[in-house]
Image 1 (tube, one colour):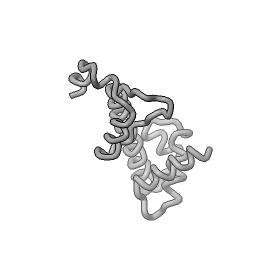
Image 2 (cartoon, one colour):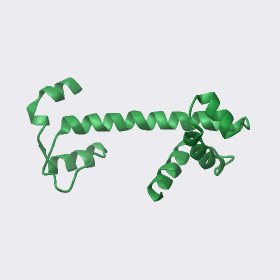
Image 3 (spheres, helix red, strand yellow):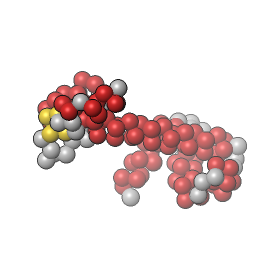
Length: 119
């Protein structure tokens, strides 16, 4: 599908109103700069796909941290087990710990995102 979009010129220049309609009806969240009148949908779809992949990866690491936290492992132990830096694990650990005993991966992710925006 992506190859078809990339090879079709009409998808590289889609007007703002059409993209807003796509967002509304398809439930997508394609970013539209207020100054843009024409959007490259090929690029927008690629960015959406990458964002979804990144979300999945972040939720996976949160899930792994939660499993280790439930085994009473420290930040250092978890970082070592997951071969990540402690600076990466520590905020996830703290966010998950704040929700003990209900470790909801999506809520932990939302808390991390909210805190990132506040920082």
